[in-house]
Image 1 (cartoon, chains in turn red, green):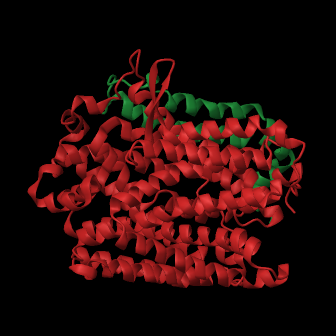
Image 2: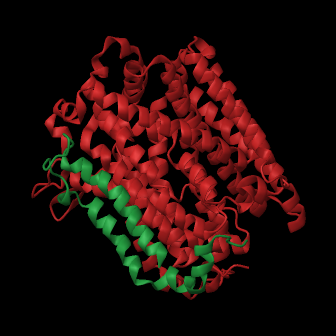
Image 3: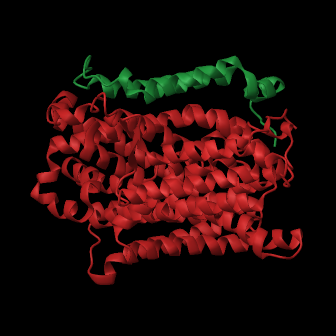
Length: 515
Length: 75
């Protein structure tokens, strides 16, 4: 029963992906149409697309897993997802405006236009791709966990067969329909995810005797953050810096930028900053389910021992669903997660392909005329989207999961290093220079990677020692502050010799009256 | 690209000032102060329906943040 419901919903999602190419039919051999769906998503499609894109299958599995493991600190995810939206509101409508006016398809293309520095743009683009690769791979891992839980099991290479088939199909509909496929599958994902969480809210606390009974079973030290002492700021500074650092990084990921630029106007992005956070209420409940999994004792239940052995705490939420949902609804919930992986995976592949095409192939490889380049762009991008998915598959099959997670952790630390060039440059005109930003980026990348390496690639919070006080700080945040300081301090040095031309004008960033 | 809905066309005349210097934008600092400094909410009591303060406080700030953003958007 689980398998029948699951498989039918999954097949429906794939079919939607292929059919989506006919929405507002246009010339899909143009990168703007394939890779940004012609920039014409209104608030409804944009809400589903961004929701499906940002709240990935990995998010829905990893956040409850974190709460299951460490308790209150895991709720930094709720704080981060909430404060990310005022940032979206303040910053990114300006990126949409300038990108729309100049036809930019990627953030790095904007950076090239703004600073006239192709090396800075390359740094921004490559950082985005590096951060995305393990992220796509983790979506596949999420799907694989679900496939295993549904009962698609095999031995040897057969273990990977369902995964390989589903991602070949993913690559197929992404290449054929582009971002339209992601948006329309996102509608199905949204409906399924909301249905799953609403049913879980109704069923699970009741089975466990209410929220009071759930919290009564949590070890007291996990219910609150460890309070700071005179020598050590403990969990407080971890919570704050994780929330801030993650919020600053979120919209810099290529899949987020691709989603944003596909909106029909900067106004749609503003509206989305208000209504998108409905998804955060889901995230809150899913985080609470991490506690529910502790209270339900799934971790010590012999029925789930195999799952936990294979997938660790990531199995907590799935075990909870299996324990309390009726059979057929387990199929719906698992389909929600697996389809939940298809949406971000396809946008990530498309967003990375846009970068490779515009900022690497178009800028450094192709030598013909601009017209010749434009004609070839979409077909090049489709090939690279296929390659991104293939690379992620190889990742999952060939590299132990632990390394993929560590790589993804590094990805978050790397991608925030593009914040000064992509986001601050939208507001600050005089105090940033292309070369200063490039040096700052390098300092941020090296210091961030060094801090993670010194912790053996296992943690993202580094104990800073300042004036004899130990301040545990999210490495992304610490290295970002260093990056920004370097970029600004170097400005007077580089401003005189700045050779790049800024092709954007101040008026390009503001919303224009209806044309 | 022409925004087709009413509110968009109503406010576009002032939109350049809205995006750069409107005073109500300072409201958006409030969620950062409220959610990033755990000293404000790292408590068990008062609990609601068995949910400690820490948790329902964070839940409450999700709609409050959206509401503050909406106030800034309207201007």
